[in-house]
Length: 187
Image: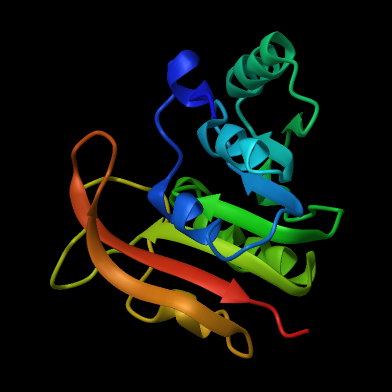
């Protein structure tokens, strides 16, 4: 399988997206905060039908250009402001990796509620978000960070296939604590 990410100068897909693809069968997936499409390309190559959304028009234009050049029919790039918390369509899988920390903290609960509502029964949510804890204060000035146990508490009633609050490294080298959740909605 050709490495489209490398071909178009994008970072590799997020490791948690790669891991999730080991359990999740191809379905309709929403890539929230897709940037230039590193996860969308990976998911598409594995048989997923991807709606890739971002609030940055330049990122969406870049992804649309890649989709056009590569002749990919399974990725639909769309301009979307996550703050709206109105996805409008149901998905089998919603991935939101290193995105929540860039949104207005007052909208996070609504965004999470919308993601959960728009996930099909038996479907999955994947979230990776920076944390700020006493032990590991967040070194970056993100608008939003999670506290201990906050993300898992938001998914009460869902099956947590993976949950941790481990140290990780941003693509720019900054080390910080991340909450990582892969949860399955009750069928």
